[in-house]
Image 1 (cartoon, rainbow, N blue to C red):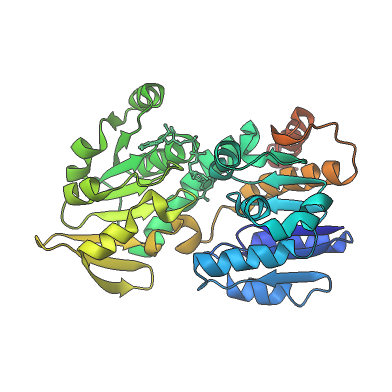
Image 2 (image 1 turned 90 degrees about the vertical axis):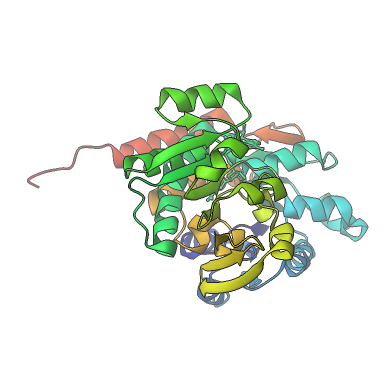
Length: 359
Ligand SMILES: NC(=O)c1ccc[n+]([C@@H]2O[C@H](COP(=O)([O-])OP(=O)(O)OC[C@H]3O[C@@H](n4cnc5c(N)ncnc54)[C@H](O)[C@@H]3O)[C@@H](O)[C@H]2O)c1
């Protein structure tokens, strides 16, 4: 079968693509602008049956062109990220033939799942949202993203979080993980989230909570993880204190109103991962990784154990959809519970088994 994959292209997803190819699949894949590891893409293109399009330096228009090219291969299965492949299928009339062939799809992210439900037309095939599983949200989003965002932040800046005031915007699975690791490293963490339930949870964990505009003027660091557009807008940029370090961990850099920031500041590059934005009033804000996912751009992405869980969910879901054993109705749906439970059991068996001392 032909699989069209739109997922961050880096060594760990590279091994997954290699595995699918070894299972007989013809793979056409592309990554996301700003996160593709070009060396991984080159290595994958050497594998028979694998075609990877796109480079790290691609812009959004180039990325959408690659998505269109992928779908031109008439895939049987789709593994999407952020809903980009689905959007091309929905919006491009020339894709009718490709559309008719798709047996089923997976969507990796929270943002993509929401986009499919809220914005795109209904499809005639099932799309299972990997991120809607509890196992992925806990293992990957909370602990994996929490750790890798912390790592990306440190690698990009070389700062000590101890005693620094860090504002985490969005206290969902990702944000709560980021807050947990920053707090464990001695950071003083503040949380902004419109949900009173999330703010209550953050309060119970010992974090200060409040509205963005009240917390932001004090923050040394600010990290977004909301999955929503324009969360850090003109008003928020104007409230930031001089020297604030700003990073995004959500799927799209549109969480930050970067066009406004670029229009209203003088930009200079500090390092490959840091740009300095100087406002007319003399304040400077340091933006990490150009607003792209800081854990993937400035760090090595999620830890390898975490990727095992997400990619096991992907593999077993695609296998079920490919083999036609799925009784799933068309539409955007959850991964079947038995797949989720199997992955949780396998992870526990592997990670929690007592080491065999003395043998
Ligand atoms: N960096 C990575 O590797 C990685 C991995 C997984 C998911 N993600 C992305 O991270 C984002 C968050 O994912 P999640 O699983 O934590 O989602 P989630 O739904 O659990 O949490 C999002 C939180 O943001 C809050 N929020 C919404 N609008 C807000 C606003 N204007 N201001 C402040 N808070 C707001 C919501 O109330 C919610 O609590 C998504 O974009 C997801 O795709 C990134």
